[in-house]
Length: 555
Image 1 (cartoon, rainbow, N blue to C red):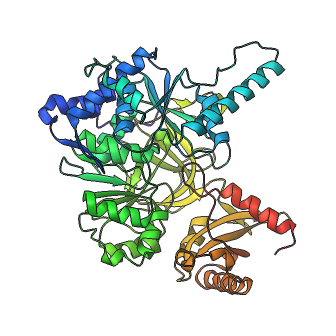
Image 2: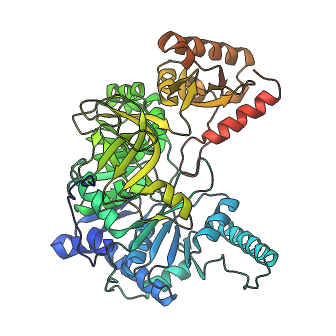
Image 3: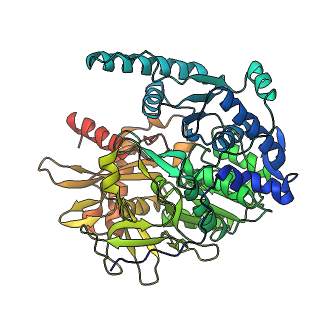
C-alpha cells in the first residue's frame, strides 16, 4: 500500500501565475498604496511595483520574448530587480537569477547552459557579461565545428541585453504601457530556475513551478514565520539566492508586508547601518554573517532593537554560535534546512521553541524521513539519508535526466543530506552524504567537529573535511579562521610558530571534548575559506588545498 502524502495546506487553481499571487492580488485587495519596498532611494508602493512590472513585461514582449523562454536577471538588489522578475513572470517567461559578480568563465557557463533569451545587467557589470558572452560564443562554435555542425555564432548569447541603469534604457522602459494582463500560466508551468550549490561540480538548473513558490509561502512563510503586513524583512543573501527570493521578497509580499533591499555587498558595518535605517522586524541571515556580527566590537553600541526574529540557512548553525547570538541580541534565530529542489525551508525551529544545534521540526505540508541506503525508515536517533516530499518539489534538473532520476524518486526527493531525528520529531543535521566521514569504522559528522572548534575562543570559523592518508584511510582535517582575523590587518603574516601553537591547541581541545578519533589530524590556519557561487564553503577546494600542501611534504 502506498504511503499517503501529507495533506496540502494550499492548492492553487489550475490557471495560476505567481506574479498575481504575490503582487497583483495585493493591489486588487486595496493595498496598492501600502509600502512594498524600501531602499536607500526611498519607498515604492505595491501599485508602483505592479506598474513597473507591467512596463518590464511589455518591454519583454516587444523584444519577442515568448512564454517559457528564459529571462536572465543579473542585477543588484533593488526596485528594478523586482520589476524585471515580476515582469518576466507576468508574461509567462521563466526567470533565471544570476549572481552579478560571477567570474567571466562562470557567466559563460550559465549563458551556454540556460540559453537565456534576454539578459538584464547594470552598467558596472555589463562589460564582464559581454566578455563572457564572447567566450561562450567561441566555445560553442568550436564545439559545433568539432561535431561537423553548422549553426550560426551567437547561439549562447542572449538576443537582447538591457543595461537597466542607462538613461536611454530608462526612456525606453518609461514609454512602455503600465498595464498588462498576466499570461494564463498553469500552476505546474516553470516559473523560476534555481541552482544547486555546485560544491561537487557545475551547478544544475533546478526547474521550479508557480505552485511550488506559493506552497512554501503558505506553509513556511505564513505558518512558521508568522509574517504579517506589519513586518519588514531585510536579507544578508541577495535576491538571486532562492533563500532570499522567498524570505526577502515573496513572503513579505504575500501578506502585504515590506521588503528592504540594498545593493551593497554585506558586511557587519553595512548590515548594522541598514538595520538602523530600515528598522526591519525579520533579519534573513546565514551562519557566516551571524559569526561576524556577534564578533564585531560595535554590536553592543548599535540599535538592532527593531528585530523580533532572525532566520539562518545555507549552512548548519553551530550550537555555540546560536548561543552567542542569543546572549548578544536576545532575538530568536531559527535555523532551518531547505533545498533548491524543494525550493525553500521544510525543516525549521519555531519562534519561542528553538532547540539549539538542531533543525527543529517538519514544516506543515511536508513529510521528512530518515532512511537507510534502501529507503527504509530508520529508528529514532540513527543517522540516515534525508527524504522529503511536499508540493514544492521541482520538476527536475535541466538537461540532467540521470541526476533527476537519482534524486527524484516517486513523491520523494532524496537530498544527499544525512540527518537524525529524535523521539520528539526534532531533526539534527549531520552533513552531506559525500562529506560524512567513515573514520576507524565509525560515522563522523564534520558539523560536530566544526561546532566543537567554534566553541574555542581562538576560533572565528571552522570547516572540516575528510582526506585519505597514505594508507588510503579517511581522516578529519580542519581549516580554521582565527578569532583575531577580523582585527589583524594582515592575517596572512601570522607567524608560523603562532599558527602551529593554535593548531596544536585546537587538536587537543577537540580530543578533550569528543572521542579521540574525531580530533582533526591537521588544522590549517587560514585567513578565509573558499566558497561556492552561493557562498557555501567549497569543501572540494579544501580537499584539493590539503592535497597540494601534503604533496609539498607538509604534515
